Image (cartoon, rainbow, N blue to C red; front, side, top):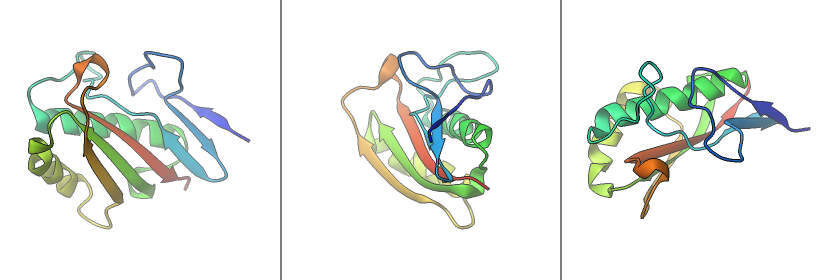
Length: 126
């Protein structure tokens, strides 16, 4: 049975989708953009800050679904420019210093709101 996951600590959907769903002990997040939840602004032109914000939004949805940062199994990172991979990787290394999740990173032609990064996750409930 699918359950809708929602968090006020992550950006509201901008289309016909949920922030996340869960079923059978797993949590699936929709792609999270680098929205600063204090100002509501999309972070642009600073991939380090943008990566942190997108990850914070992913973690907020995972927590709303019953997981936590350490229960994230897989992350998919969509980048406007793969030249930013080293900076993105450095942020991930700081946040996931121990037992990091599996991860894929791909360059895409365009992201919603012309964001520089979007991140989605699969996590386990704890």
